[in-house]
Image 1 (spheres, rainbow, N blue to C red):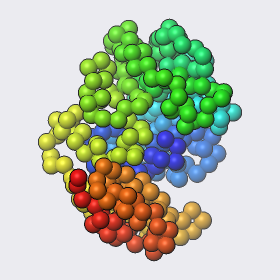
Image 2: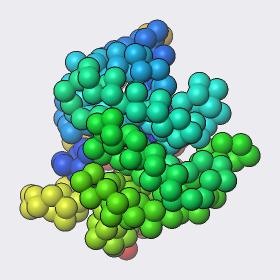
Image 3: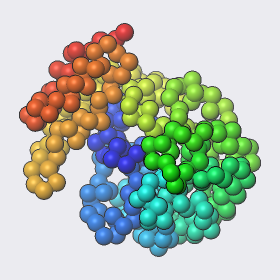
Image 4: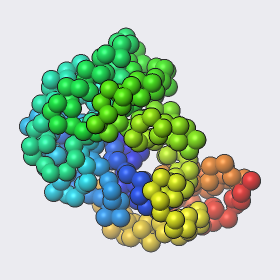
Length: 318
């Protein structure tokens, strides 16, 4: 979810669901060791519970970065062992780490020795042409021995050569039964499934076998699907916010962010926030007109967030 689940996106999603865990885009250890730490780690307190996802392969660097995350107030540190992009391959982290479980175990132990919050791992079920369940079973077993108790299982292989990151999210076949078997083999671990899940019916089916479900693209492109999650999965019967109420809650935030960061070298543009909201009306009559207004460069240049209200007026339920 690089360039997708930034703090603006997460704050928007938090208006829709109060309890669902939110995850940052992957932040590399290099960015935290040598870059602008506040730029990478600042988040809105309303986002809790929120996890910081780290990318890296050096135990000491990950321990330092995890400590920064804890000091910044994150609720969880998640190590990415699933991203297949060329960028992570050059840095020998992400999905590449699945070939080095001993190193991953060392990384997890180093982080757990440094922080008091949960350290979790997100991974694939295999890499390249490795199709055996034994591979992911042994990977999880070794990392669990290092102290990790929660695994987010993207139920596809990562093809490190020959497929783009987009193709890696679609081409390798989904093998949900691998995640189910992990839960049977490691009943004491928390197993969360990820990959290709789009509906609450699918979520409910998975929850018969494992402990949790992570959504990626569907939550981004159709965020209002999460509107019923608090009641359905967390027992919170508070009224579901309408789309208009979600937008109304976002307006003061957008105005505040534009005032704070609207000038300077890293100036914030209205589109930096509204681009995450394009899917709010997915499935409704007028959704295309909604997206068109929020994609109009001339209208966006005005910097007026009331554009959202105007766009929503063109939409109505099927």
